[in-house]
Image 1: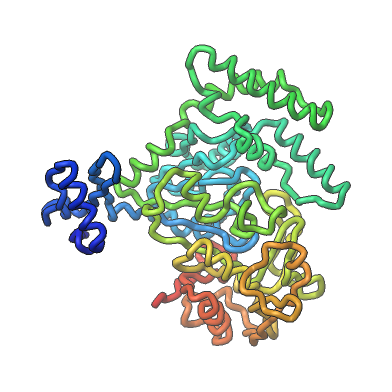
Image 2: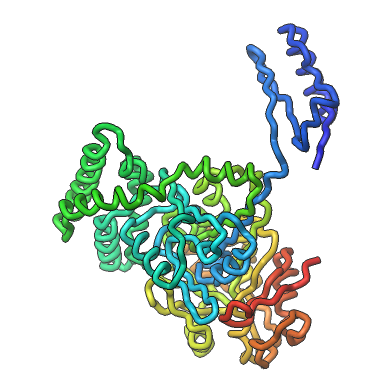
Length: 494
């Protein structure tokens, strides 16, 4: 779409500044002509810097909004994989931007179940290219184990899978340290409830600028392997000083990585160039977020969070794409709330309701097998999540789990010391003392798993969904009514 702009639209100050720069420094063509503002559908901007004046011409192609993003809106396990599966039929590039193999979801196609942890779900689409981005931390043995399992199920994907050269590597000692740290915290009754996959320790070495990236391993530059070995030994020795001797065979690890170096080379790409090329070629891109907003390192229930940015910010930093490339942000919302591991959970139901949700919803983690804590839908959490991620539409999942409830409660506010809080509190002591304000809605008490169209849902189910939409001011686009791939209703979006 062509856009034209007149410099006057920037105001008199911009006009005067352009005049000033042109007169004082004898710059020619300071004022753009109408033709300058139109350039094959690109919006052209002329930018100046006071001082020794530099006139720069920057082309911003608004047609490059090709990336759609799927993000978890709660504490994870919302069912993101199913929406990704649905969207994958029509995409050309699928990218993971953060996290590691601590995430997990299952996609069911026919009678085949595919478990994904680190690899992008777009592998199920034989025409889709798949990228593990620079924000992901990668345990290479797990990378190849997951790839082999998928290949054993009949998916040929080696020529469609790529790994960022800037991604950081997870080593076995990171996993050992993760478990040692968790045991230490558990003894102090401050356990985080990690998966023990080494994700936190790897992000820690990344933040301390002592981490090892993929390019350090695969480089053929002179002395590169010696540098890799030195870095790994230094990392290991630092952890030994902290935790004492622990079970870890560093010589065996080094020998294994000599083999992995050659195995991983064919997958490695410059992910920034890869994504930029996809944008320029106007490929349909889907970004697959791992975990969820309430586990975000900055905006989640810190310290009971993961070690990466799980919101929209992690998409940009984890892939190296501009914000202007984002077209849609889809928030995935479970129709009730669950959480794995430790940490605050205001609407948790430690009673028959929680047990019923856990039983009907089969709430057990894909990665750890741990039972998920269950509670009522929390719209305070979802509004906070919406503020940060800016969802353009929502996917409500597992609505069918609520089929047998006579009435449903939905959290609409938190009170602290008698006052309604304006936002989700950052202080866990406050969060642990809030009084949850609930709205009670009627249930529908009928099976919706066989419903094929949104219009055929029970009226009370529609009212439940409408209540969510009105509170968040975000439209619902899809509704999950069962575990099967086809159990997803398209909802008309106004």
